[in-house]
Length: 305
Length: 255
Image (cartoon, rainbow over all chains, first blue to last red; front, side, top):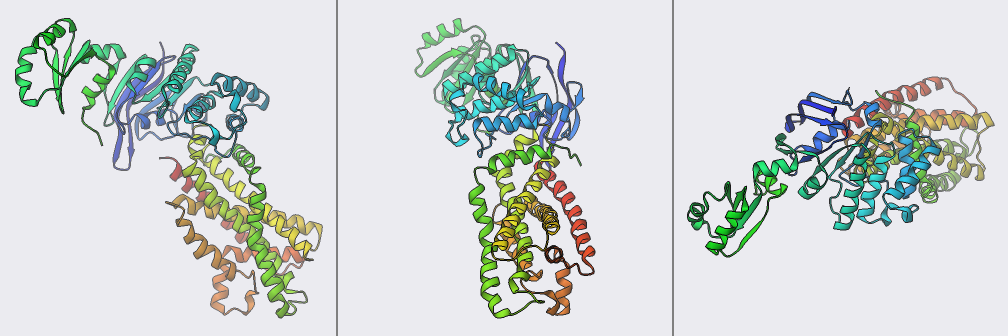
């Protein structure tokens, strides 16, 4: 797989604040690549540099062999952006929003009409074609943002938290559409805080924290390597930790105390489960490990502000 | 500077949204200048006698006309642009397309100038109804050209203010402390020649003074000496503020 995006020692500063602190990564053509991180970890700043709306402070960033730069119209022409915030034109209808945007991309009117009809259908907004934006639900607005991002037949799509604030139905519809696009060979870059979303969509992810990349890899591999297969959450007073840790040693690959809960991670849950039954502890949850465990383990389980 | 024909795309966007607001904006941009024409022109004009062989209303119309261009273009590039930038986040989505920041800002200035042209034209029609018309057809055409220049000038000035504005309230400083006083010191309502010397000199620093002088000459077809200088001031200042507006807005838009 050839790389469509290559970043080397990429830095982004806003005044004194370092948002992206010297990261390097490669994204392959046709891949779905996820940037995960708590708020303010630098993932949005990174994707803004990739789609050329924010200048690179230092380091290098190339997209499709060209340097990313705010005046690089060639790159902007081949990129579709599904923004985090709803940036639709409230003065216009659904159809007019798309017509105006296709003009921004110099798509001839006749061709634009064909694409708009296709895309409105793709995101299931046919019935809302002539509605004003204020008459749409949040889910519909997000779908329209996808339709808008597709107008220029992009080779690269950047989805910055595309499902924030959506109900499960709307979220699943958006995931399906994004997977369909990926199946068509489009490269997809996703930033998200929903670990389930990353697991559903991404081939490869990086976990960012304080402007740096903490870990990179396949979601399933990261879970396996960092956590194991299963997690036991036991709600017991902290004074009993030492005793319990001694009892479960040999069954788990690691443990962590957060607030009122003691977490045990393990590679093979079978023996741990037996031991837990034997100990007959109250308030115990035993479940498969998820990407969320990896995320929380790496970025800390306490609130980040 | 990264300007392209895409300015037209931004203008097109504004035109699409405008069609829903045409009537309210007509009313809004007519009310204040009309108020000046009626109260000052007819009301006060009755006490004023003749102004260089013509009625006071004849004196007043060209100045009020360029003032209405100034106000419309300014408000569009203050409030209109601010809403698009901060509340609607339209610039954010524009910048992700091949439209550059400069294209976007210049497109909005062009739009402000167009809004000014519409207001000025309406004003001209109202004045015609009141019996005051430009002296000839070429003079009407020249007035259109002048209105475009005045619109770009004040649209760009307003854009500079917008590039610094933290919120809506900030605009009151500009409209109350600069635009409104300018109306009274630029020879719109009375000739400048009876002002004391220092005030005459001060008026020369106000861009509206020059616009009013040119408008009055074009309207009447009487071109006094020094008019070329007035026009050159407008064009020169316009070039500088237009350039500055693009630079400053780009600085604000791209972080």
